[in-house]
Length: 273
Ligand code: DGL
Image (cartoon, rainbow, N blue to C red; front, side, top):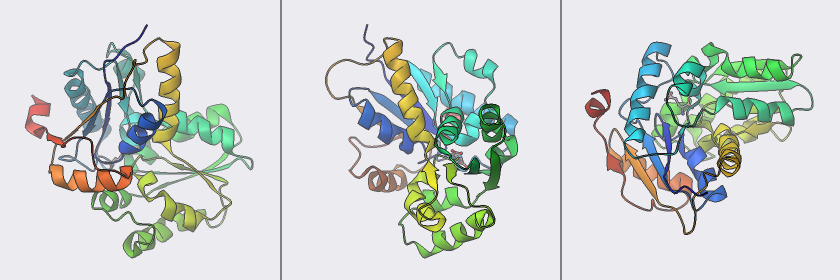
């Protein structure tokens, strides 16, 4: 059995491209619909109620395209989604928290794990819960890094960007007393500045990219459920709810090639209807 319907991926902005990039690499035949809610980014300081509403609106938007699966490629949304919400959708759904937390548990040798993410994600304790279910004695240090998302959305992503470096050194100093051997980049925006974070943390720390880990899991899921697409190279459509040009430029830089087709615009007011 084969299924060429697209996979829907959403995030508050550019972060979900970290999952999309890996999906394109692992499953080049899949059709993808990407939605970046740039009209409402950042999500990270919002309440769980607001985030649940945004999640359902974004999911409804993707369902207009007859998607076969939905990925919340956003740590913040993933950490507040309930099982009921995911189950009530009627199509396969995954967030990114579980795949990343389990990957960190596999990788760590010292049991010392760091988690960075948005304020809402860190407050939810979602990564911590899954890590402790798997490794009860793990020593986890978690830290919110609220300035990272705006920096990434504004293109401050080069490895030697002095502004991002200053901010990152300040946030990451929380790990200087007890250096984790594994650091979860718990917000999907953070892998866009992974080279800079990696340089500050040093060689002894392995970085975990939630979008990439989730894409691997999705590949397994599709093949074990007979849902993989057949045949030739898949197409990707991109939608955003703010300016399309800003997204286009930074997305192309991150993906390493111009986008296959022009970014399309969705009105935030239409999402809420
Ligand atoms: N990429 C989102 C995440 O993984 C960013 C949330 C935000 O917009 O603050 O948490």
